[in-house]
Amino acid sequence: MVNIKIILDTRKAKKDNSYPVCFRIYHRGKSTIRSVKIYIKEDQWDDQKKVVLKNHPNSVTLNKRLLKEFADLQSELLLADDDKVSQFFKPAPVIKLQKEVAKQTIQSFVNELIRELRLDGKVGNSWVYESALNALKKFHPADLSFEEIDFQFLDKYNKHLLRSGVKHNTAFFYLRTLRAFYNKAIKHKIVDRSLYPFHDITLKAEKTKKRAIDKLLIKEIVDLALPEQSTIWHVRNWFMLSFYLMGISIVDLALLTPSNIKNGRIYYKRQKTGKLYDIKLLPQALAIIDLYKKQPYGYILPIINRKTKNDEERLRLVKDRTRLANKYLKRMGDLIETDQTITTYTSRHSWATICKKLGFSIEIIAEALGHEYGNKTTAVYLDSFDQDVIDNANEVVANSIDK
Image (cartoon, rainbow, N blue to C red):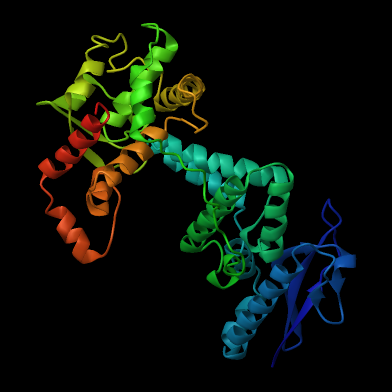
């Protein structure tokens, strides 16, 4: 007959005065202890009910885990024969079991993900993960296991972010990224799917302020009399070239080299998604490119204006230059006397909005921007688009600015 009891093993305290919760297994006059890898203080434990008290911040999650592991062990031992039960009383297997249940912290798991992203050259994505991890560390500086994340933790974390001055959509971003970490941990078998805490919390971004400006404001930007070779003049060129290339991001724009130009077309792979783009160079785009012949560092534009050692340094420089561009785009907004916010993102949103107003279908716009749209039937239709259709849409949008 096997008997299992849940105990708080108070024989030896850890440095923080916490003790391990354990299963004590009795069989044929022998007993052994198996740690659950849950550590709590004496005043957080109800020895009669064998539960973690509510004064522990993660009591709900820990009690769920304790109940599940107790039921699993009970099922395993009650159905086992004597020989198998006896294995629990041999030193070696017990040590092995303890190693198997050792939990990887969120910090160590995410740091490994970041390391892999860097090895794969996905520096931008690694920054996203680092940003989310740093925000989490500010809220919970100590090591944190995935099992400790429950609804109460997520709710407190969200409130902490908002109270500390973080905008709603930034808080949403941090929580969504934490959810991505959790989903990856489930796939790596680091945490059990049954503990998934995000079912009970709603993650929803707020609608952001309209980022597009109409073609009249684009025309006013084109017509601004700006001193040649000044910073604001360069930024206007970058912004308009982005527009004429159907809203190419400033990162992708900065990384373009002469090798990306073939037979009057630009071919490039988007940094964010890895999608390949093939865009016809319109006269308006060529006129801007012709202003920047033989750049010293091998790029079409002088956005990357110094030698860089690696991808990370290069992208950090582009990030700094993006901030500079947004500063001068704001000045352009003041010069054309609009209260609409103009940033490097505006070119992409404006291209799409103008294209729609000119009567082009959502399917064509989605295809031009590299977005998926519609169902499988629509996808087949999009695959059949001739490149001329996209080229024509871009040409009509670009020419509408001059009318």
